[in-house]
Image (cartoon, rainbow, N blue to C red; front, side, top):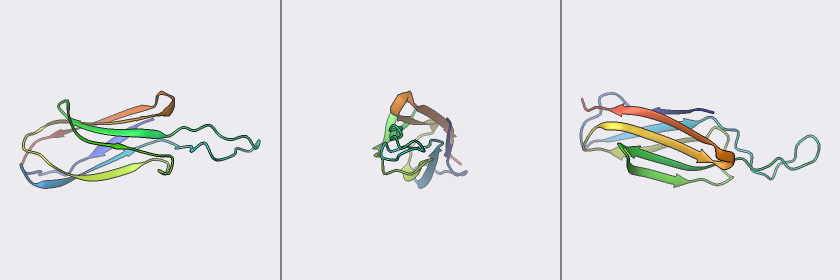
Length: 105
């Protein structure tokens, strides 16, 4: 599975900008039956963490109500640039990561 992160060009120090991130994941809730009538085992993304050079900036916990291929967008204000790392984690050892370099205009 993979993840994407997008930040706008021309970010200015101290100004609000939007971070957009997406994970490719089927998000099975554990409540849906397959063709054989058996429940499909739960397999969801449970956490999203965003760090800048190792410092946590944003985190969220997800539930089975999140749709497949979860997409999250949030505002951010930074006073310094660096490497933005977005990490998605979930059931069954799922882990996907995406990076974006933050440099001010």
